[in-house]
Length: 270
Length: 120
Image 1: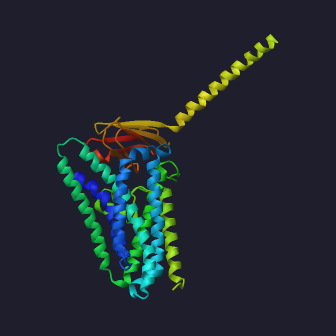
Image 2: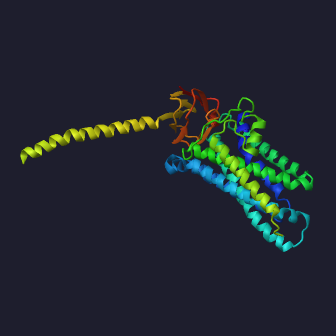
C-alpha cells in the first residue's frame, strides 16, 4: 500500500504543483476557476486515452513515439508558460489593482484563460496517463492485496492534491507587492524545468546528442526519491544527473522568458 | 565469344563475391557499432537481471514486456524512464557510459523487477 501511495503521489505531485501555482498566479483573471476545471477534466480524459493507446504510441516513430509525445507536450507547455508569464508582467498588475475596464479585463482574461486550460490539461495528461496505467496494472493483477493497493493509490492522489493546494494557499498569503514577482519566478522555473525534461526525452530517443552525461552527479547529496528532491524536481526541474544538452535547454528557456518579461515590463503598452 | 563470356564471368564472380563479402562485413560492423541489446520482463522480473555492455559506447536496448500488465523501465543511475505496455516491446538508447554498475528497475513492480547494467 505504501509503495503504491508513493508512486501515485510522485505522479500527481507535479501536476498538482503546476495547477496550484497557476491557480494562484491567475487569481485576478475573471472566470479562471471554470477554465482550470475544464483543463483538469480534459487532461483526465486525455490521460485515459493515452494510457489505453500506450502500445500504439510506443511503436510510433520507430519506437520513440512515447518520447516524442512527452517532449511535444512539454514543449507546448513551455511556450504557453512563457506566454503566460510575459502576458502577466504587462497586464497582471493592472488587472489586480483596478477592475478598471471590466469588458477589457474579461476579453484579455479569456485569452489568458485558454492558455491556462492548455497548460493544466497538458500537465494532467502527462502525469495522469502514467497514473492510469499504473492503477490499471494493479487492478489487472491478482486479487490478493489489490484493495490495499487501491487504498494506497487514493492516498497518493490525495497527498499530491494536498501539496498542490498548500502551494496555492501559501502563495495567496504572499503580500500583493511580492505576489507577482513570486509567481513569476515560480512559473519561470517550471518552464525551464520542463524544457530540460523535454531535452531529456529527446536524448533518450537518440534525437539529440547528450553533450556529455552526466555533467554532475548530486544523487548522493539530494536524491530524486527524497521528498525535497521530488519537490525540487517538480518545481525547478532538479535532475541529479543532468546531461549537457538539458542544461542548455534550461538556461536558454530561463534567459528567453526572463528577457521577455523584462521587455514587457519596460514597454509602455498601457 | 564464348571465351570472352567465360572470362568475364570468371572476372565478375570474384568481384561479386568480394562485393558481397564487403557488404556482409559492412552489415556486421554496422550491427556491432549499433550495439543492440535485449531484456525481457516476465512475471515482473527482468531477464537477464545483469546485462554487460561496453563502456564509452551508445547502445540500443530493447525491452520486451511479456506480462499482461504495463511496466515502467526506470533508472535513476542511467537517467532513463519509459513505459512498456503489457505484451509489447520498447526501444531505449543508453550511454555512452563510463565503467560501472547502473541499477534499473520496473517502477510498477519494484519489489521483484530489479536489474543492473554493467558497463566495462
